[in-house]
Image (cartoon, rainbow, N blue to C red; front, side, top):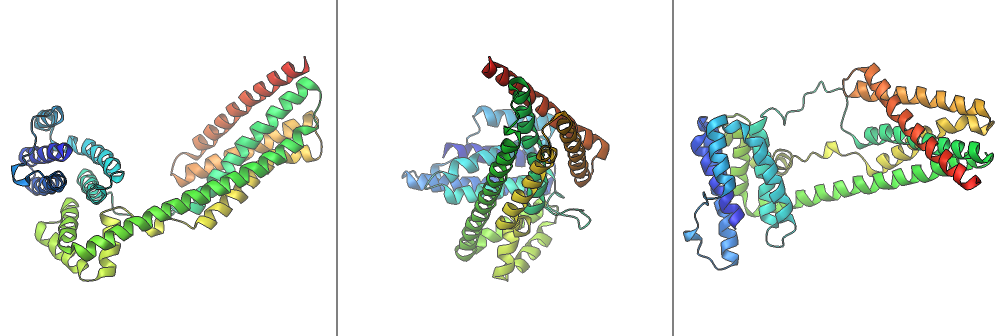
Length: 355
């Protein structure tokens, strides 16, 4: 309850100090929301909610009052978003605070919109989707290349020290199998967990829309006002959306919670992408050793891996609209450094064993 009263004081301070009248109204509404949260906690411990007052005498509230006066309200909003995020974690683990946690998620979303009103808009000219399969494939190739090349070079270093190179291919194939299966399993569990969390949040939102439609309407109005819409326009837009339960649920999920089912790929697709991609990446440095284990194979493995690393680095740079040459060289440098360290470790262990 102390946390809510402090948060209420902070929003009240910001509503007073903000010269932007529309934003000041939003802070005022957030202040009222925090006072409602405090009243819920008060009811649990048999405290009269009528006696509750925002707590202005805290270090955080005093700091925000001074900071917002000197530097402006907009400078403090990103920090407030982090505070709300911490409160979400706090309430999510409390049996009595889970419904409040959901409201704190909405507060964080509103603050995010105030900080960057255009952040929620996704332009149609984005070149790549945020699907899990593409991400899993690119990361899988990269992981396979670096991890198995490092493993093979470590075995090469050990073989040079001991004079026994019989286990290089076996180690490479074992690394390929273990790594690809581990990547696939991890990606499946990760994507599945994301979907389960998404579904849980949707169920909470559906419950709130069913039993507290007026509160949800006000929350949606707040978000649209934070995006820059006039209060009347925001209200008309929100009321139109709330007429359809399906549209309301979809909109609330996207606008309040930042959830979009299109952002999640298939867990099986991601797992398969990871397995295949890691296998391909891990197989590249192994190819020369399938024919021979002499020094030529080592140099060929280095060459093939270097080319592959540069291609992957260039592809990642292209996806993120960065300099392709820089991305290629950076990936080559990271992979090369990892390989040198692993080779040195393998050589050192090999020397130790052979003594």
